[in-house]
Length: 251
Image 1 (cartoon, rainbow, N blue to C red):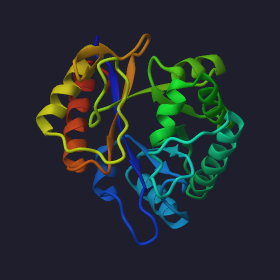
Image 2 (cartoon, one colour):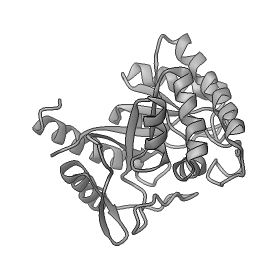
Image 3 (tube, one colour):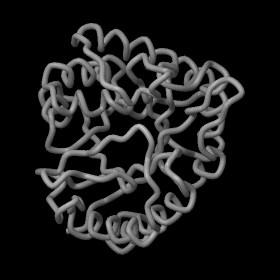
Image 4 (cartoon, helix red, strand yellow):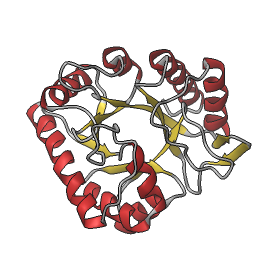
């Protein structure tokens, strides 16, 4: 059975005078924006501008908190205790919550960024800490199906949004391979992967395919703003998602 789908992108990842990705174009091709909260990228002016951009395009906003690692763009793992991580996330999510309130928007979800996304997917204790932050703000949690993300959400009664990445690789065992700098990917390969996910719920790995996970009926497909050709990739994914949703009667 086809999966209902949305397209999401990590946004607002510049800093001061420096920009990262074409947020203006990307915001026109997505349903959900994961806005950086200051610990891997962004600052108070960029957060504000990105929230305004999302509002102008009718895009739902989620928080994208990170480990405190500007130099490594949040893509380096860090030893951290669950209570420390929870406080780290509340600090960041609370900042974005303020900007959303300022512009009359609701927060849709929380999605961890970079290295801590992988750390929490593997660790039940860290997952419970970050999913607990979603509980604090009464919003959904976006993460990897079939991992500690989904289990913690079920345990804590938090709505879970299963995510799949169109522009990243997965190991033969189905583990997401998080890279500091994303490699280019052809539109043909993206289209092939997306069609397989939407029609059959299959994750393309380095050695074949694997099911996305038990009980998943809806998926949000991520395109990174710093992947080469991100706008064209997002446009391709959005077209395929819209076609699939329409044919399945979801749209």
